[in-house]
Length: 230
Image 1 (cartoon, one colour):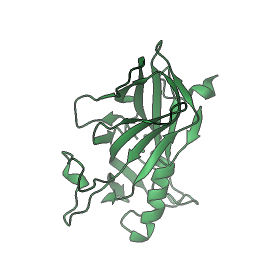
Image 2 (spheres, one colour; image 1 turned 180 degrees about the vertical axis):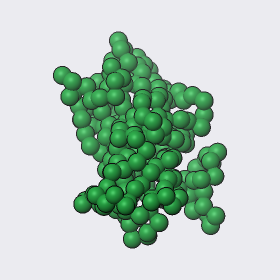
Image 3 (cartoon, helix red, strand yellow; image 1 turned 120 degrees about the vertical axis):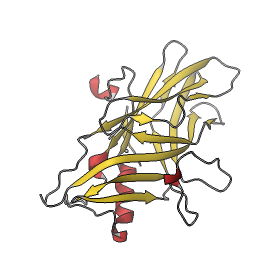
Image 4 (tube, one colour; image 1 turned 90 degrees about the vertical axis):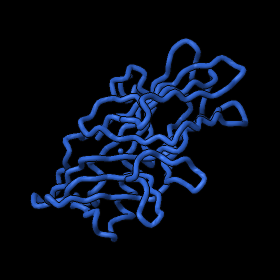
């Protein structure tokens, strides 16, 4: 199954040493493994102009919640472990984000919420997500453009969704991969560089990042959509 989402070159490193997400239920519990993968992870973006070169050296995101929405029950199963900071490994490869223990059954949607911290949310042990004037950020991306360093911070909230319905059973673990295409982030539709220091580019860069994330079922954990391999 495949969908292209509102959604970062990467292996994911958590601020905690490990993450186990669990949901309580009277029914049989099954596990869903969540991984992340970088695509186009050469640490640079090829642009139309040889004079413009964007190199991404660090990309981090704040996941506030993971939610499994049942296809058969009125209530969804909320997984709220976190917040989780994902630091994307720009060398690529699968890295485990966490394992969710959920009731066996059919789920019509899996949501990953990338959000800046609200006042009542727990603090994260990363000062990059907090601004000097009280701002809170959902993503922090650092690198260089034409050799000049930049740090792009955004307060934008968005969801990464896996659809259509998928089954979780008590016989085998389901694996889901989030693929982040970093080559799209700082380019316009013509392939020209978007300078992250230019405030006129903020909305387009945010949209590019949101649309660069793809989620798919990847039970063999090879980083490819299982549907494409059928």
